Image (tube, rainbow, N blue to C red; front, side):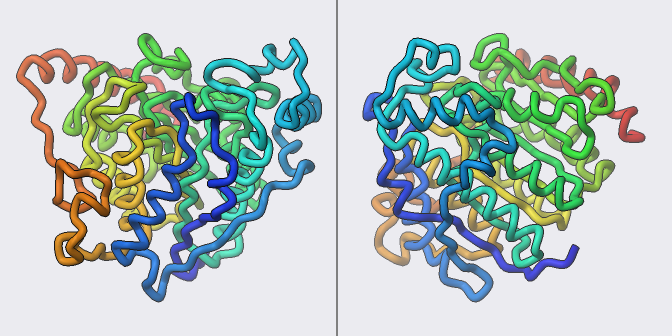
Length: 379
């Protein structure tokens, strides 16, 4: 599939009009801050970059994955209607509170990711980024984990219906059980997730033995990682699992979920990555030469998340960031007064004890995947 080489950043001020409740850890302002950082560092002005303002996905489009009953409940709840049955759909919980315009926000996020899929299908872009997407927990009739509608599933379905073989790579610290379930018995979408083990973290799924079913056996790949996993250990697993599968499966398009909650210091998780690890992984994915549809996802340390997304956009767009020190803004621009080194994090060195505990666990996980999944791909 020929592409134009153009990179597209999907953003709209409409996203800022639909905030989650103030006491909810999910902050929609992350995408706006990432956009502001990217713009201030001259990452949105090159000839090969353009911005697109998305429109909400239509109800009939959302119904291609979500049930009509659930869509009606979501819309009604957002308008102030309440029923006890909504709780059975995950609505009104701590993770998925009911608030005005929640349907509008979710539909707009889906519309943005579907716009990204269309740009790839028509060949007008080879990398598209929607930082306001990545809602991988939502099911056909359930909200879960701050996710009301599943834009990842809808985009993968659209790409697949266009005849493209899809690989969905999920780097969010939480397992995307909604995406996994949607494609568990299919092989047109290979779902690969790196996440903190469900033994300790929501949603409690995504173990090594979850590898698909029926025709989809071997096309779901989970890499659960222990608490405290650091850059070197994570990148070792990525190199030994993701890179061989990417080349063996040889997808026509890659859907990349860039949740930044695996970064050290995230209040809702326990991994200890720096964004240098994300950089190394995304560079490897870009090097595969496939069209990339990238989304945001989790990330509850707002400044670290926004800075990480700006850095990912720099890689996806092939841009060169203006040195913040040269602009005289440094940590003020990046909302991080501790560090004036630009978008990249400081390196973090693991302790000897940390390596002794984590390395054997990661090695065992990788060995299990290579034993159970790799044969389905001729590896």
